[in-house]
Image (cartoon, rainbow, N blue to C red; front, side, top):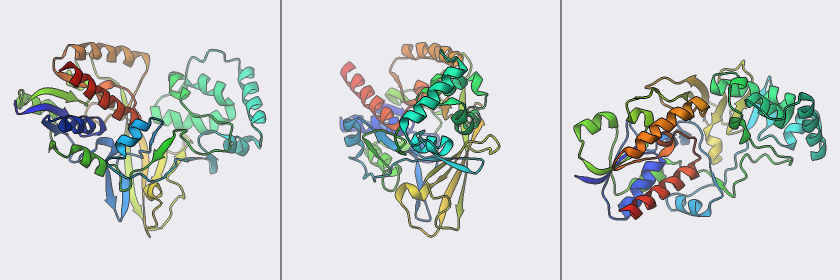
Length: 368
């Protein structure tokens, strides 16, 4: 055994785990199939602009312990996420708040908006929403649903809203204040210079190998470490013995544009089904950039196939049952820790990933 831990994946979970175990005197080898560290939070520099290579990542948390933890490795700015939505040329504020309701209905008081939504839901007779469409209609009524939810959601998930579970939309913020802050978290911001520097600091003291596929690596080096921390797709680990879990993937079209300000906001959602991409990201606005040029990414949801990068787990009943079968196999694996969004087949916010990695460290230390 050359290492105490072989950590598969140089994203947030693997990097936090490596840092904590290295700090405790253990040796760690971190491998990643990509040619860079950081996983999906990887950032690069282009024309003096920090580019979020795999879509925007705004750090937010209510957990002071996690906020203090990440601030050990980088300095965060005061960015507040306030996306806007464009529907057939009209602009609306997100999350759904009084600015949104005023734009659609002309209402200026919360009671007016609440009554409108309540009466709309009552007229539709929806008491127990069975799918995403019914859940959304009961939450915001048909006008908001048609303009700001239906097209965007069906692009995102590649299927009609009537075929999606209601749980997907339940986390959607709905507020009756004139507040465009998407998150209500106590702590929020973007690391100055991006997340890559934070990952580099976390991996200090660990050996790192990039362009390394674990499923091939383990056959050549079966005894390289005492334990394995696996953050890849759980179904791939078991060679898809029960069949592949379902994901949605993304395609990013990034271009540099010769203007100092392309869209005036970091995140703009396009909610019409007629526009194939879901949002446009202007990266300089995450750090209040003043560069004479700008970098913009268009984000296209695409159908996932094995071999493509999985981004969003499709958490319907069929996939839940399939994941449960893989989870039972995972419990039988000796000296293997499964973690991260792919190893756990769930969507995590960044603070949740860090918290779960710290919990995994403490659990493993306690068991030793």
